[in-house]
Length: 353
Image (cartoon, rainbow, N blue to C red; front, side):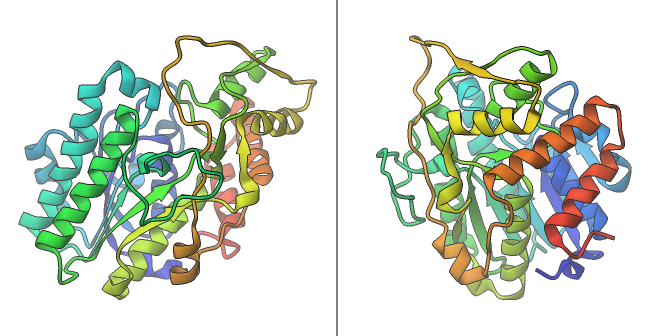
């Protein structure tokens, strides 16, 4: 991907205060994009957005994606060429606790950003980031393809299935001529430095290890498509760039690791303990009243590989090593910006200037 495409490009990003959003802001600011962003206050304390020195490099609006007028005002001021929509209630377990809020955010938030495209205009490329969990999960041992049925089980997954259908409806009803081209990206589970979320396996591992405690793993046998956070972010940039240049590239794309990096949660915990060292260990406990979660989930990423030339760069073990490297810098109160830029540079091989 030619990163020079993004220099001085006007980009509107929702969900920038989250884990993935902060990394994407760092990438886009580093390549000279003009970023306007819209999101709630950072969801955790501490949080990556506040410590990675991007707020001074972008135009940041704090607001709720459900609030249409505030979103429209920020969007109108930005006059973006490219829009990447990542704002969401992103946690399965939280969706069981607050289903209405999850649907309001993930469904009506998507409607609101698409209404910006429809009524304000000027956008030349739009990407809605959803999830690998949008599919009707049959517990297959093979990966789901983009043409498979959309029917997420839990409120989070189902709300993202709805967001996929809404995006397709707007594309067919209002942007059928490819103006603007509209795509969705269904990304697998992401890991990386700076994720402070609760009830996610790697942040839970880090919290336990940093306190010299044994790691608790809820379901060591569940299999997920784990990938470093930079993998999907650069895939998002690739999709939006390609369809900006040629609308025939618009569509829906799975974004995940190679099959060999779809591993069980127990294997992921093993890799973390190996990378952390110091005799770190994990254990599992019985959870009889735990909400439903899929046991087996894998993506078939043939489409993005064949159509766009996408290829995963870091396997799951390398992703864990990079996460531990970032975490050690953070715990030692080191230079967070330097470690992020170092990892971005390594990932791109060309470097971010």
